[in-house]
Image (cartoon, rainbow, N blue to C red; front, side, top):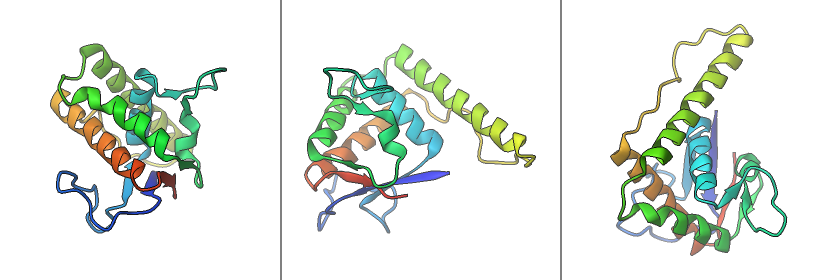
Length: 160
């Protein structure tokens, strides 16, 4: 199960410092559900996304990321991008890493159970947390870069 986030008005060219996830579709950020779930958890931990609406706060809601047709405005993209910038200079804190690892593993277990409950054989597509501190930092920075580009390009939308 995947979701695609697409820059609303794709730039004519991407910055040299940004390698798109798929060079054939440079305006898209296609993620498996478990990857999106991990990024959402990271944004919750950083105070940019809320699990439930909070009165008086303008946090993004986690459910918005999975609903086709939702659009994230440039100012929302800026907030996401700025939250990810903290990893440019510092390593991913151990407790942050552990929380994301636990979330990833729990999500994988839930997906596996759902597939098995339907009577389907689970043969692939479920793996334990594939990141170490360095690769997680890179993934968070890449997500921040995508949202920074989206902020300058009309935001992004959930397309599938």
